[in-house]
Length: 319
Image: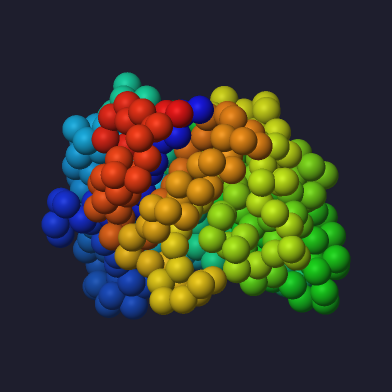
């Protein structure tokens, strides 16, 4: 069983390098001419793409094979009053970054923000979600990265869980296939349990991302090990292995906020459960405040804790 660890968006070891620089609509709108506006958009986008390349190079140098790209890569790309054609200016840049990703065999994905609600009862929210997710797919296509996925939550519980689930299934059935085939569904920490999401994935035939911390915060008494085989099976038709999210509570047991680092004992215990119940390769997205620094610390902690684990490189383990 081989496990690769990844991190989210920011490489803290690189200091102030960020691929999430923004341009607010208010600031954009204060620019006087169309040339000033487009030049500012290009300036911020170039900065973000340049930073993304630096982060990817850093990942390669440190044998980090799994990475979540920020969803704020392109400023104002989905704002209804802007929606500029960034691909017109950065087509070759995207191809170049896409080659870096593919040649290094790195896995990358997106996690669009909470404003994307597939099961909303408001038509405009669903339309905005389609627009936003379509833009994320555009980036994957610009990168020529066919394996790119987007992690999405089920949404809100308006009208009760059963109605909310039905609304999700009905709404996603209307989504363009280019979006739908990129979606992977995650359990959340308040409404939809891992069991709920697993059942939805079976109905609509989409892969599931198990968030272990969310399961600990929100469950109906299910033992996580009893769900693993079926969760892994939702990935049976996918090119990539199953994806898992792991984080530790910040202050107290089942605190929904993420800690700076990962509790190595809890992570070790989960590995034992996964080995016993599924015994298949998987990738783990570490969601912790200290980002890439957490990967280094977790590996070092595991080396002290476990003598039965083989460490293939800086972020990959096997046992």
